[in-house]
Amino acid sequence: MEYDLSTMPPADEFGSRPLEWLLGRGLLAYRSNVDVPRPWGIGLIPNVIVWLVALAGVLACALPRRLRDNPLRALLLGGWLVTMAALLAVNGTRVLYLYHYFIPLLFGLALAAQHWAEARLGWKPALAVALLAGAYGALRLPIALGLPLS
Image (tube, rainbow, N blue to C red; front, side):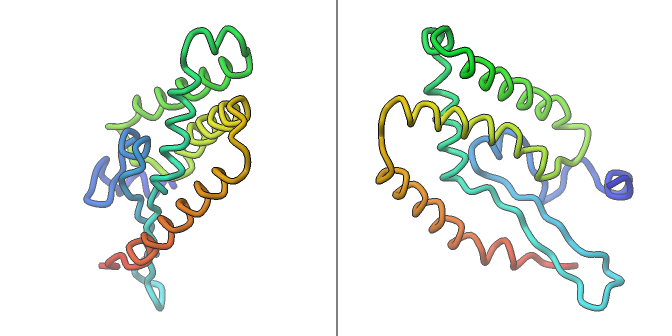
């Protein structure tokens, strides 16, 4: 990672910004070294369905009344805010890696799960969301695996 940070510019055509990932857009590109026998590359693309579920969880649970009634929700929202603020703070100073985005994503999904349970939506809508997320991932797979290597 130290080598990557010393050679990579803060932005490039395959770069990513926190607000793009919050909305399920952007791409992180990983390429092998060119001196390996068969260079390879892979693009990590956010699944817009999953990210929108997480964002909906944040928005649905951010009302002050809901936060007073549930300290766990307040803690999760606080964790989401802190981690997103940290990502935004380093936005222009370094290349951001995929694992940086997992923490706020997990906070958002936990908030969505809390709201889902309170709304008693059941497993059938969850299955529909899972199928949509899977279909979106399948449609984006050729882009993720078809990066130019030079």
